Every structure is written in structure tokens, then in C-alpha cells.
Length: 252
Image (tube, rainbow, N blue to C red; front, side, top):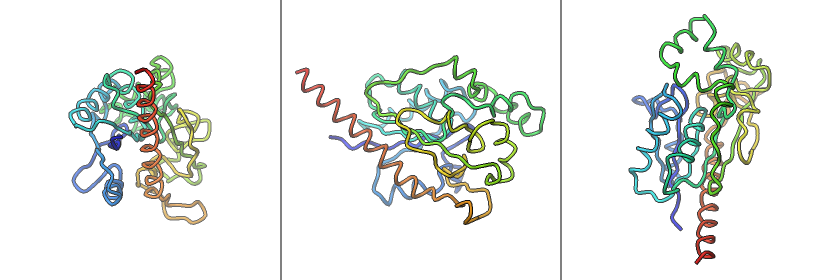
């Protein structure tokens, strides 16, 4: 059985790296220590789900890796689901683990599209196409069916408003339910739900922009989390690959 290649997928306004700055801070180094084959593709940071998924397909499928396990942060999970359903004819993707993905949208996207505050105006100026697809209404109108031969699972993050860094607190208050400062817990759940982590949206990728605080378990140990997430994504891909091989043998 071929070992899956892990692919880490970034979110809205994201990137793979900019010089020494990594979107997934320290995660690549950790995967190298574990001798895990991985890719960190870069897609249009403000593009639509379809545009980002097409860019992702071009980068992944030029590799000779026979099997992929995907781990996606934020909007990257929507890109991955579109890719799996519409752009993977050879069925090389066998698992998807999403982290803080707005599967059902987020009220924060609606607020960003309507607010006249400086930062929302700037974000609209540079990235309206992708932003418009992150509202609850857009996600309800653009369903993406799952594929039976893929293992889907997910994590959500949550911190109460007083634990969020100061810059995230106004955004967390826009969302009228438990959230990580950007995405509601209920929206982040897809497939096998693996739990709610005590982390804000950016802590998942190693950017803890709040002061260390033992009372609120900050900073979140994102490297320990990613060791676990990588193992879970790889196990899911291996399980689905084995299942497919068994089904193929039975049909013969």
C-alpha cells in the first residue's frame, strides 16, 4: 500500500510562505523530523472556491504521489472539498481533515461585506470574490456533496471573548455563538468531528497573537496538535485506500 503524501492547504488571504514567514508556522519542520512526505501548495489568496481548487489541482496532480491526505485550515477546507468532488477523476485524494473551516459560512464574512470600518473596506478592496463565498447564504447556495471513498473529519476552535487577542475580540462578538474569533464552532464541524480545541483561529497555525497566559492555556501548543492531526489524516487515507483495495478484489 503506498504511503499518502500530506498536503497542507491555507485559508483566505493565506500563502505558503513569504521569505522566512510561514503560514503553517513550524509545521513543515516538524513533518520533516517525522520523515513525512508533504506539500504546501499556494492558491490565489482572495480567489473563489472554484478558482482556488483549480490551482490546487494543478499543483497536487503534477506530483507523482499516488495517494493524498489533505489537512486544510479555514477556507482551504472548502477548496479541498470542491477539489475532491469535482477535480479528482483518478480519486487520488483519500482523506480530508479540516481545521476551523466555515463549512456553513460565517457571519463575520457578512459583516466584512457590509461594514464601513477601515479594515473591512480594505479587505473588500483586495478580496471580495472569495469573501462573498464565505457568508452563510453563499455556502447554503453552493453545496458540495461528499465522496464516499474519502474520509472526512474536522476540528473546531473556541475561546470566550475575554481570551481572544484584542484584535480578534470585535470579530468574535459579531458571531452570536461559540467561535474562534472568525468561525462558529457549528460551522467548523464536518464528517467525523474530532473535537473543540481551546484555540483561536490563528493559534491553529502557530500565530498566537495574544500574550502568554497560563490561566487561558495560551499559547496553544500547535505543534503537538499538528503531530496528532497529521497522524489522523494519514490514518484516514490509509483506511480508505485499504477499503478500496478490498472492494476491488471482491469485484474481481
